[in-house]
Length: 111
Image (cartoon, rainbow, N blue to C red; front, side, top):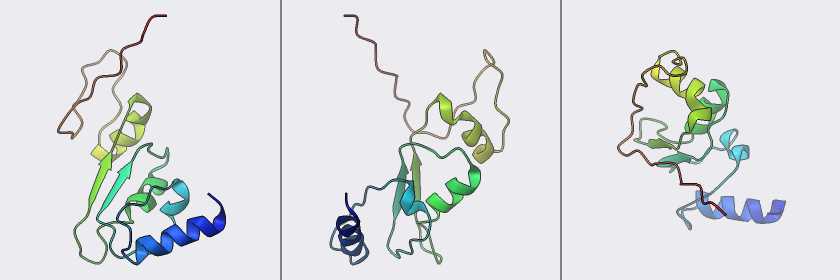
């Protein structure tokens, strides 16, 4: 999107004209939008500071909010920090993440 289209969409979101805003990490800092009720992370950032800024878009000023993280093995170090545990060595029994449902990796299709 060009700059004008991004700004137009952000204005519509902050005005409540649209309910969903999909963004890159660019929106994780510097936006003060009052009514963000949910942040969904498709790719987690690698640094905790960036994660805190990103999820800080919701649950502001005593309001409720929800953060949903879609995680893969690549996210294990940050998830371990979030859960206050150390990453387990390869082959060690895994601790379950706080998830209501585990989704299996897609099966590879032979050509």
